[in-house]
Length: 313
Image 1 (cartoon, rainbow, N blue to C red):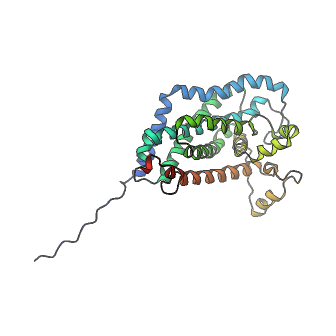
Image 2 (image 1 turned 120 degrees about the vertical axis):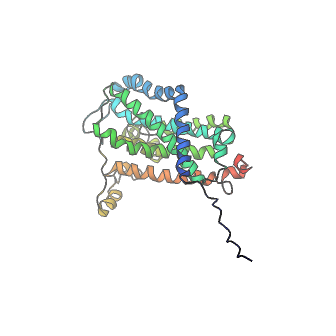
Image 3 (image 1 turned 60 degrees about the vertical axis):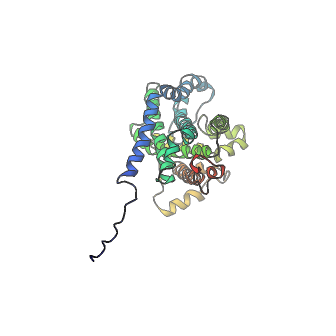
C-alpha cells in the first residue's frame, strides 16, 4: 500500500497585512464619522474660539502675564491661553471619542471588533490613534484661525508641536478610554464627564499662570501640580514656542530633579527643563492609563468581563 501522505497544516492565523487593514478601517471610520458630523467639528472649535475672542479681551487688562518660560518678554493673554485652548480641544475630543466607545461596544462596530481574533490592546490602541488624529486636525484648524488673531508662534513651532499633540492626545484618550470601561450605560457617561473635564481644565495652567494660582490658594496650586492636564498644556506650550530643552548627559538628568526650587518640592516645573519634565509626566500617564484600559477591557480579568459586557457573551 502506498505510504499515507503527511497531514497538511492549516493556517488559521490572521490574514497577511490584517493588522494594517484593521487599523486602516478603524481610522477611516473615525474620519468619516468626523466629516459627516459637522456639528461635532463646529462644537470642538466654538469653545476655544469663544474663549479666545471674548474672554481673552476682558482678561487682557485684568490678568497680566509676566515674563515666564518659555516667553522671553511680556505676552498678550491671547498668546498665553492658546496652548491651553489647544489642549482643551484634545481634552473634549478624547473624552468624546470615549463616549462613542460606550455606544460602539454595545450596539456599534466595536461590538464586532472586540469579538474578532485581533488582540484587545491593538484594537484599543487603534481607537486611540484614530481619535488623536481627529483632535490634531481640529487643533491645527484652530491655530490657523488664531493666526488671524495675532497669535503667531515661531514657524518651527508648528512642526515641533505635532509630536506633543500626538502624545497629549493619546494621554487624554487613554484616560477617557479607562473611564468608558467603568460605565455600562450611555446615559451615565455625561454626568461622569462633568466631574472629569471641567475639574481637569480649570485646575491647570491652561487659563492662568501657576504663580497666579499660588498667590490665590496654595492648596489649589498643589492640585494643579498633580493634575496631568497641566503637563499636557505645558508640553504643548514649550514645543509650540520652540523652547523644548532636554538634558544632554546623565549628570544633567540627575541635576534636573535635585536642583528644583527647595521652597516648593511639589512643583516639578520649577526645574531647569520644564518642557522635558512635562514630557516625562505625560508619557508616564499615557502608559499607566493605557495599561489600565487594556486590563479593564480584558474579558477574563477586566471590569467589563466581571460585569458581563457584550464581548463576554
